[in-house]
Length: 332
Image 1 (cartoon, helix red, strand yellow):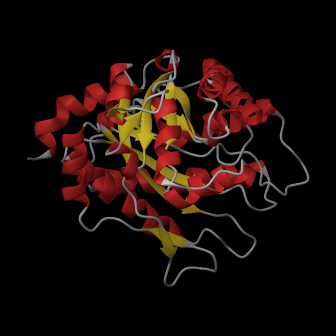
Image 2: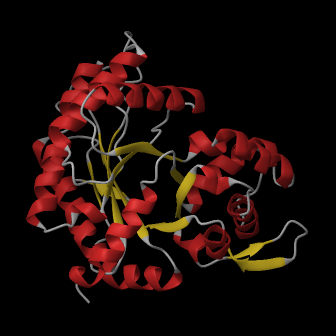
Image 3: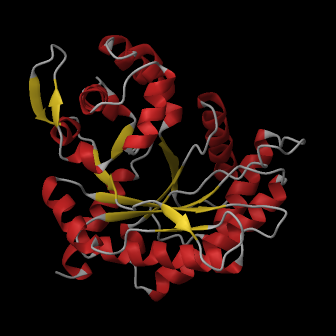
């Protein structure tokens, strides 16, 4: 199979994920990451608890009203659900599909230190065997994929040109590979909030990163109409003493995107990147307000994980499924 064989399917999936008023639920936490979330509520990190929690997400009433797609961890894609009474149910992926929610899959295999890079810089792994894995995920029902590259800003010169170019190339190789297996690639160059840099610095670095990413995508022949972008929001660093006003976050974001992201990309779905539920929502609202006043040919939505699930997890606490589902209903 080639990319051309999937071109119409890719475009249709990307358009469905970019439906107005919707975003993505990022439920692709690794076993270790979800373990930390469980630890915060005093719950043991077992396969049964992970299955029960993700089953309640998949069966939350009304989820499809604002969620067009869900990013899953590999374990979840192949798990059967557990129903409210504890009896076994259909595959979790089918519960999402029954609601009209498109399943997706995290395909990167984590970051490693970047040889030749500056202290703390990394590159993302997972290209080996990716085509075979993507074909298996597509057969199981996944229709899009996610790959997260991580960059940081520091007074020591990060990100280096090596880190930017290496991560852009990895994103492009991933995107082309999964498109040839029928999966829409979500391109995620996350710039961490760590540091004391101001919003102008964040925006400048993000513009450089995005331009480099789209140059690499072009070289690899990635079909942009069948792809999505998942960037971090560009506020100031977490330790910056001067917090930007929300309207400035919106203005810097739209300006940066208009300079670096082709109009052929159907949607830009922002990650919450460590922001609280409220702050992530306020920033996204400010971005959409700025977009309404300027140039924004893409659907601007969200791909939130913790910002949608934090309260849900606390109310579930390992057993209270109705309370957890009611809370995720309020969050989205």
